[in-house]
Length: 368
Ligand code: THG
Image 1 (cartoon, helix red, strand yellow):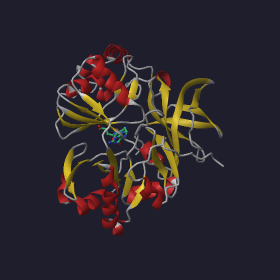
Image 2: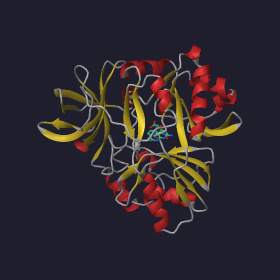
Image 3: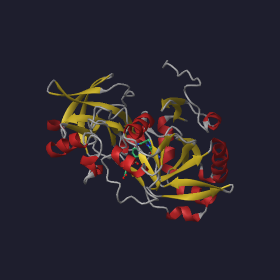
Image 4: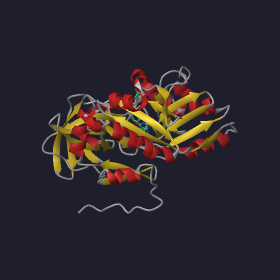
């Protein structure tokens, strides 16, 4: 039997921990020291349902770092090589955040409310302390704190229909990575067209824990005939879609170029942000290794709990960090960090998995 997770006050609850239990959550992980569901029916059943219907996900673990004050825009731009100068007040940007060595600290979604107020919707690392430290060290005029704001994701092909039923038809016109205000029980909430799946959908930034269950309940009430279910980020679907997992697929040891996020490192910001000097060299020379998608031959692989060595002619040339059987592609799909001489599409490699050696091939990512 797999070990189970012991839950205490340190593994923070979310506004929907009780609802997840009522909807039969079968497994949790810990992310930002908070509970994140990983399985409801089964990873495969959840995957098929997500691609066909609509799911409501407790992604409260995507904690917000609020940056508020006259120096907020300056501070957020210091964090990232992505150019924020053209960003509008209703936009969200996927931003690599790097340290002084160009190492990735996080890969959050930045939500801009206005120049003086931002949310940084973080992946699994303690970004709050880095941002607070910078603001203090550089004497910037900005408050940095974690507000009581918890994203609730609505994902899947029926997400427009479900959202329109609860919040009105105007939501259908919201563009990708833009946000707007919706009203619920007379209170405004920020909602963006975004989410950690490639099926399309929304994220409601639920402000106030007390509003969590009423919004959840309204979505389930309105979505009965849409076969709405509780769900969560799905391992298979996110690998197929090439969505990266910070802490798994890249860490503080990797630059954004290695993580395949070079397209977000353009213009002057890419060399003037913290770590910009290192990034400039990396931009000129190119990374020595980079994220790639690989298919893995044979029957379904076991979960990848530790990186699997990737071999060419007996020498290690990389590692696989995420892997799953894809029912729709009828093969194992995986994400790994691969050395330059071996990363071209079509390159054949060998992976040392816990189930033995497997043949693998570099593929275009996203897989779907
Ligand atoms: N939504 C919100 N916060 C988050 C996540 C999220 N915080 C944690 C984690 N996810 C951060 N990581 C990602 C990874 C990928 C994407 C978003 C957040 C993503 N990527 C698209 C892609 O790569 O195709 C689009 C990127 C773009 O074009 O800007 O959506 O999911 N609130």
